[in-house]
Each structure stands twice: as structure tokens, then as C-alpha cells.
Length: 401
Image (cartoon, rainbow, N blue to C red; front, side, top):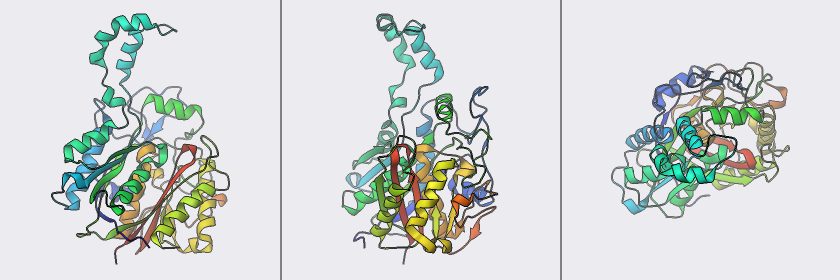
């Protein structure tokens, strides 16, 4: 058993279904989906033309930071932790590199000659005039973490994790580990995805990862790829319980070391991460699983196989769902969003459905939640986050005794 408990003091999120977590949760419970046509830029001839975008946030500046600030504020205010000694407060964030506006990239290209060859000499001459057009902080993966540390006066560890789709869950795992080791008393942690842009849609589309049908339907027989989404999900973890009703009980991480994009076909790495999280928590079963469930044919089937390997027939007494049917795939923020879904099941008994799941694939033989949310008392929950490259993370949370 873990010697040092880690309590979930507050959560917050901004999603394409709501500007805060309660509003988002209500919409998710009703089975709503935020996936729709991309309107922010021309997607003619793109492999996929849909996304789960947040229309209420402007595209100027660092979109990642704007999303994280709002989610972090909600989580912090809900936590009631009060004043924290600066050296005992840590910031842990799952985030990928940002991207400069395309007008800026165009200006940089012109500065280098604008042809098929990058003219270093010409770029050197024009670089001075282009400095004002380029904000390096927008590109840095660590910029958002550093900004949060300044805003919250955190002098403890400031950690940015960029592990693609397991970034957010891994950030929460590292935050819990820091508290258990006595490195900090309070941690503001989570993940952000701000990837609804031409580069991401073109890149993921070229490798065949995105849906051509325009629907995110994890574990469905008709699934053909994921949908890019965006948002931020933040959590306040603490050594002191306060009014918390949920404890982060276990974390597990592993690496497939199999393929850049495909998971181990036997689900070995995913199973090892889940078992490690369960072992850390001193448990062997859970009542709810917030699956990684991307809506890609191979990944969903392998995750289902791994879940059966870990839980066997005990899995049939649990419930399984994936939030990506409704909000798409946040990439670096996905695991943090999944943790908030597990928290809702534990704290409020709201077990969310997998949106758009109508005909479960026999290869994904799981106790699915379909249609609308199910109300059930859940005492323990598992969250999965599996990334390209085989970087796996699993989190186990439970209701406080």
C-alpha cells in the first residue's frame, strides 16, 4: 500500500462543450458531441475536415496558455488550499510545442527568399525585421508551465511532459510522485491540447490516423480514425485531505518499445502500466474504466485485449467508456481529461457514455456505457492514456474512506 496518500482537492476544465467542468460534464452526461466541421481555416482537400474546436477562445497569442489559465483557475478555486509556501508548490503540465501563426511562418519564408531553397544569407539580412513577428514562447513546450509557475508563485518543481497522448496523465502521475516523495505539498497539474490547426490535421491525416467519415466512435464497428480536439483539464493534488472525497491511489507507466505509431499487438505495455497502477494502489479491481479509446481500429482493439488480460472476467462487473467520442482527442491533454471523467464517477456517481458508440465491435468486447450517463456508486476507477511510441500511463483513483 502507498504510505503517503495524495488527495484530489479540485478540478477544472475548458472544453468544446463548456467553459468550465460542470457545464462540460452535464453535456457529456447527456451524450452530446462537440465534433463538427472545421471553421477556423480552409480544410478543402484535407483528409479529415472535422474537429472538436472551442469557438469561444481567440486564436491570437498562445492558445495553450489561454486554455490552461481558465482550467487552472477553476481547479484552484475549487481546491480551497489557501496559501501555500512557494517552495512547496509544484506545477506539472502535459503540453506539446505550440505553433506560430501562419502569417508569421509566411513572413519567415519570405525573409529566406520565398523559393524552394532556404537562403541563409538572405534570411540573415532580413532577420532583424522579422524578430517582432516571432514569439519564441509560443513554440516552447515549457512556456505554459513557466507562466503558471509565475502566476501562482510556485517555487517548487516546474515540470513539462511532452509524451504525445500520455502527456497529461503522466504529468498527474509525476505530480503525485513528487507529493509522495515529500518534494512538494500541493501540485497544480494536468494537460492541454490546442491542436486544431492545419499542420496537425494534415500530419495526422497523412498517416491515416484521422476519420474520413467525420465521426469519433470509440470501440464501434464502423470506427475509422480519431478526431482532433482541444481543451485543458487541470487538477489540484495535495498531501492534506481537506474536503476531498477522492484520492489518487496509484500510477503506472511503461513503454512498448515496439513501433512509432502502432501499439504492441498483444497489449503488453498497456497491461504492464495498468498492473503497475493497481499494484501501487494495492487493488486488483475497479468499478469504472475511462479508456484511452481513440476510435482508431487497431488501438481500440489492443486496449480491449489489454483490459481483458489485466482484469479477466472481473471486467464484466465494471463499466468502460471513452470521452473522445464527444470531445475528440486532445493529444497532450487527453489523459488529464480522462482523469476528470473518472473523478466525476467517483465523486458524483456519474459514469459518462461513449458518444456515437452504436454497434460495438466484437473485437472490443467490453461492458460499454452507451447513449447517456449511468448513475452508479463507483469506489475505484482506472484511467488509461497510451501514446505514439508506446509511452503508456495508467492512473487509479478511489473514493476516500
